[in-house]
Length: 397
Ligand SMILES: *Cc1c(COP(=O)(O)O)cnc(C)c1O
Image 1 (cartoon, rainbow, N blue to C red):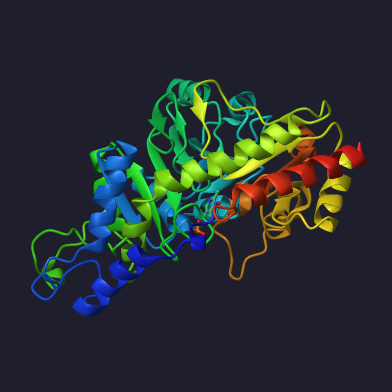
Image 2: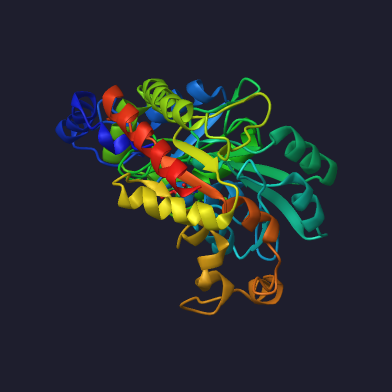
């Protein structure tokens, strides 16, 4: 997955371009910037690649999720459905708006289980945030049908699956809004950065204003601009956007390398009868940022994960026990630990996750091992890794 592996000539040239020009801010300074608009360039490239009308680049993936929700009018007390297996940013963005994160189960796709989503809908539900974890997607047709039947917003967190697609559409472009992260460990990086994409003019108009203090971005005098509603500062700097301009041009190259490396690993594990693979919904194409497989029991998966580590196979994750990606270790959310007082709507309506039964998620996540795909491996290195992985797993079962 990591764009950080390749910080090359093109990235340096883009940053140098900004440094020489000296305008580090994405808005204003029209005269001084002499045609340098890196954030805008990145937005154009992203909208073109994702086949959406609009793209708006912000300071992080977490910011992109927050801005996406805000742009669609999500606010205090609204319930947003999200998966038990994701990154903490998902519920952080919801809580930041005073909205209520409602966790539901994941299935063998390792993403939202449509049946569980349907069961969690209440009169307060406003949106479903689907997270395409570890390079692959949820069953988007089923989720889109549930959302349209119940008049809910569908937001795609495609931070870990940029470059993947569903029935010919780029991931992120299927829902009402899609979000990406360009942090340092994602498939393409800005150092720090993120983006949202949409085909809905209102959401885009709200997004660029909300992420810049409510500036309406009309005219050429920032100080004289109007502020139609309250906003915040989620701007990206031109320096970060410049890195993204170089990286987005390499997205398809990176995904191609990931696919090649993934395929070698999969071919080596495929003959082992006890190993099964994550379900990719029909019509879906992964971005191959991770190689995900299941073992017959959680006990075996935990054991195999330890043995892989001992054998020197790095970057394989057992998410079931992970601090950041699975609900079991989110004590801060489970205990509502915040620095200041949480909005009353959240205090009142946040479900009691101690009592919740996520055994369906546990069944899948507990048996899963997920291995990061690196870009820099040589073919020989991947084959050696694959052979070693196969023999470690065979020895475990
Ligand atoms: C990385 C990530 C984010 C947050 O992105 P940042 O740019 O680090 O804020 C959100 N969701 C998922 C699934 C992620 O992997």
